[in-house]
Image 1 (cartoon, rainbow, N blue to C red):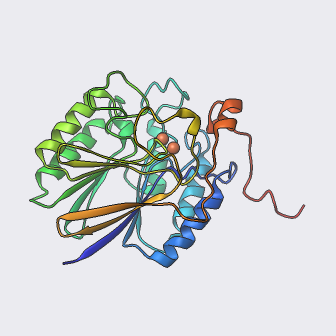
Image 2 (image 1 turned 120 degrees about the vertical axis):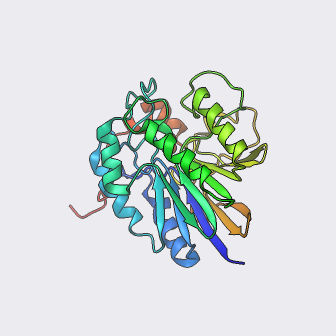
Image 3 (image 1 turned 135 degrees about the vertical axis):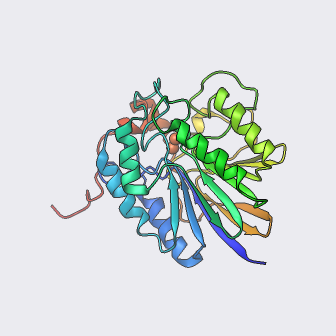
Length: 289
Ligand SMILES: [Fe+2]
Ligand SMILES: [Fe+2]
């Protein structure tokens, strides 16, 4: 029976001009050289501020290319933009943002078959955006599920299906919105999707909805413990997820590398409101001069 080793890393928030979170990424790149997984999956927020700083895309791509193994990525709200109107940061997803993503990272939604599993990557921010591409994504998803031909299925999305529970109301920017959630959950149930991987919340949690395991991957960049735990059992620590797929089964574990620093941005967020408003901190700031 073949074994497929997948690493999910998320919310790297990389930038050449705002290089606050470069250190843990450097550690991660070194770790992947030792571990040599079959695939690294990056579940969004590769950039710190892609909608405003196009060089974040260029830089994030350069950083992904440092990985010594194959990788695949899906966008987060800090890459091509947030589901409109983005009441929090005012950076809605735009055709230009999507084009930037596609230019540097390939299609923003995709299907891949790895080791007998079907993996489907989604652009969570495109759902209910009204943008061209929204319907095409749903069509691709439906088709990929229909033609999986008894392959076990895993879905990756930057945002989780829900934060507190499947019946939560309102269009929170923390999770996929209710209308899309309802439809995705119906599809997961109907097609017996085994795994739904997400990022965005910068916290680790493993839970289950019917037959689907829901994994929230932590960020490799920063945590914000002042947000509390919302009454849930979860871990606000930096790290990544290590999966092993074997036949129709999989296992996972949270990895917290000893050399990762748990950057707590509570203080910065109090001062600046968001990591997208932090002052420049260029990568080459230590260069002679
Ligand atoms: Fe993030
Ligand atoms: Fe995010």
